[in-house]
Length: 122
Image (cartoon, rainbow, N blue to C red; front, side):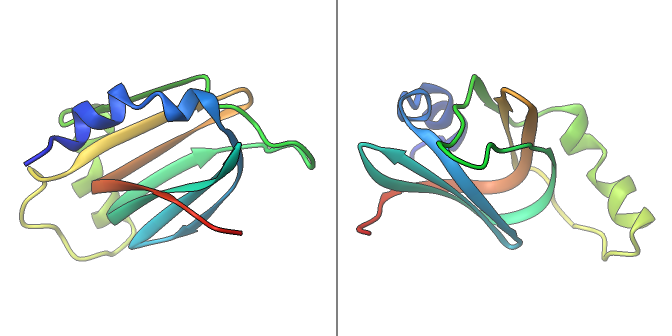
């Protein structure tokens, strides 16, 4: 079985495309890209996320840097944030990955089990 952390870190498509927008709607978060065709990245079974993103009105934005890991302060703080927001505790966080993307004017952090890359016809 493929490791989503390693696959995400090795994904060169992120530097080639321009992020045109994103949809935050757990349990899934979707990023929309253009290069030279449309493609999307779906984070599935999202448990938590945080972002500060300012996208330009036209032309999209590039992802400057990206990483993924299975141990981070973001992942370790999930139980406390869930408690603070009166959400049910999670039994097991071991299957989660922390996906991080740095943008020109912000960032996106996603705690999810996996991600999927797909081409989209538009």
